[in-house]
Image 1: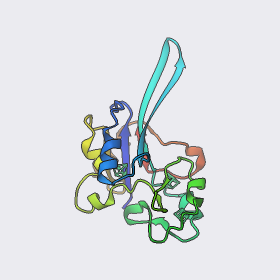
Image 2: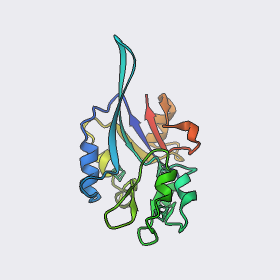
Image 3: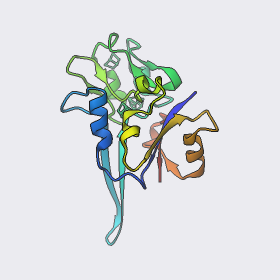
Image 4: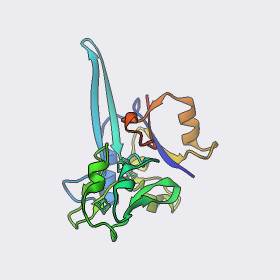
Length: 177
Ligand code: SF4
Ligand code: SF4
Ligand code: SF4
């Protein structure tokens, strides 16, 4: 099993509902976030293209944060999800320094925190909170190893990219373009 997310840049309108849902669901402290919105503009006037992306931890298959962690607090969990054991985290920030995506923050209680793919919801048969609330259905979560899954079919059919592929982390978030 390999959990992944497909995020459709043609559907995302940058409403930030996913950000608010994540903060509420996961009790993310004020001033921090597990997901965020990025807007980029490319081209030259008047031929401009704008892209809006909901970004979060990429749950990389070859995750430098896991390699960097001296206590194994950062580790691979069910379905390849990269997770942090709060009890084992000593707050040394080695993982933060190693992540090319700036996906982690230090929780005021001293441990490092980030997106969990809402595994607590997934294990109950629910969608991650951000996926569940998206008003344009821009996000699809599922098992990329299951050829019958919606995400596998979507990623097979559409053009996609991952972020900073040159970092060699093998991200599990596919941005549909
Ligand atoms: Fe680790 Fe960063 Fe990859 Fe998430 S995006 S798995 S924190 S390297
Ligand atoms: Fe591991 Fe915590 Fe240090 Fe990150 S801050 S490397 S999770 S011990
Ligand atoms: Fe937040 Fe869950 Fe979405 Fe990750 S999957 S960004 S933890 S709501």
